[in-house]
Length: 283
Ligand code: ATP
Ligand code: MG
Image (cartoon, rainbow, N blue to C red; front, side, top):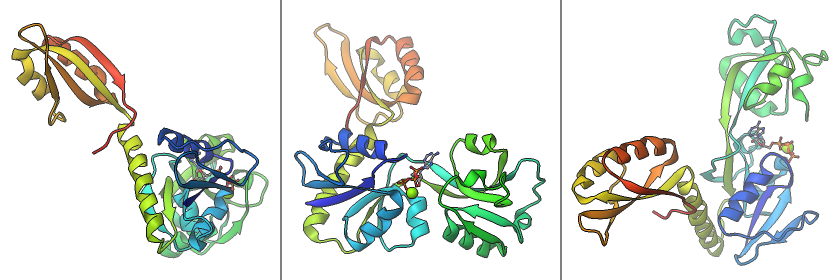
């Protein structure tokens, strides 16, 4: 049995549960329980506040955890960063009132900065040779300047909409973050084996993201053209068709190139093109 800590509620909760579901792991729905089992896999889910996940994993209360890299770096507990996950993307930035003129990092010298990430900010300012007053506040950091609590903020930004709403502008992006899978150091070997199986599932789901499975009928004499047109196609599956001179071609393509590919394939005589979604991809 391996125990995974995920955020109980908040921005990473839903996507963590989605990843488990897409990996074929059925989490028994027990919203009020702190700990729940997984249907047919030796996995327990521990629901925690994201702030507590790095420590829980570091101490071995949970063997593994899904949490923002920002929290991992801020808390400085010793954990293994096993894998970057494709969600929870954001950055930690310095922002100032939009009416202010920004003239470089020296702007922050002697200023009061509100943040929930004092360790990361301190580290950054030290590197830049800036001395500032760092005020740690737990939430609603973005309102600190307008109520006179601080001159600037250091906070999570994704679209920047919250900053604009609060009359702020982003001036320095200090660190990129995303959800990461972390593990307790020196995990026992039976747990390591379960983690390996889990990783295989996660990676299969990730690989299939943004990919489509394309099937079409193609005149046999245009096969070389098709291969040229689909550079990623190392070994397309080619099946004979009952009709002479034709074959069926199966290939995986990136969704963002899908329509270009279809146009091209049609122009060399592809017919009966089917686009299917992909669920999992093994290497
Ligand atoms: P908790 O109650 O668990 O302490 P929280 O309020 O501290 O939650 P959330 O706002 O739910 O935290 O954010 C959790 C994590 O999601 C952040 O630490 C960050 O890694 C990521 N995150 C935060 N804001 C965004 C955003 N706007 N876009 C993408 N990811 C984000
Ligand atoms: Mg938190």
